[in-house]
Length: 153
Image (cartoon, rainbow, N blue to C red):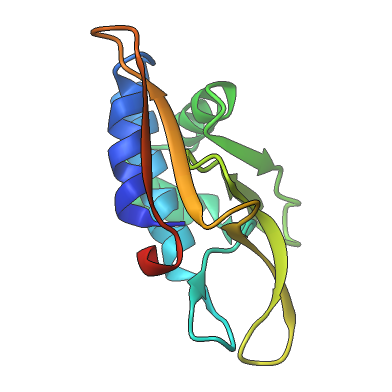
């Protein structure tokens, strides 16, 4: 995923979708955390993990809110189709997050990381260009952004 493009597309998406400020802050923080756990590949690319974990205590601290607010913001993002969440198992592992990219031809693929292990990451599938389609609320048109995928990493 390309963080800068996703932020642009997020703002474009917000023109037609209402999210609370807390849900927006959570989206940005989760994007930051997902970017921070990107994996280098043997070819030198950095790819974002499809699934990553974040402890709710970290979210409370980062957002400056309580547990119930984090739950509300997370549900708001999930209901809006911007993330998937697998519930934490208390005392065993934190919740598992999956960010839903705006770029339409990004998909989960298994790649080898530098440690020789396999990881499920987002990568381009079905072509060399990324395309994000965002409805423009002012004129009702669909806007597409295409750039060379490999140069965006």
